Image (cartoon, rainbow, N blue to C red):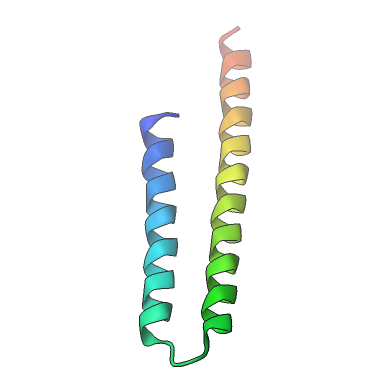
Length: 68
């Protein structure tokens, strides 16, 4: 992973974690709501990482083709 990829991944993880913590602290609902939000954010983060990795791979392939 490049430095930019690591920074973006860290940023996304930080946003997701901050959101979960804020919801858990401020939520007066039962544990089911907190669990659903947590699961949703984890799925969102995983999907984002996968999409970003695919995009970076395609971009690297295109750059390689241009230099060939």
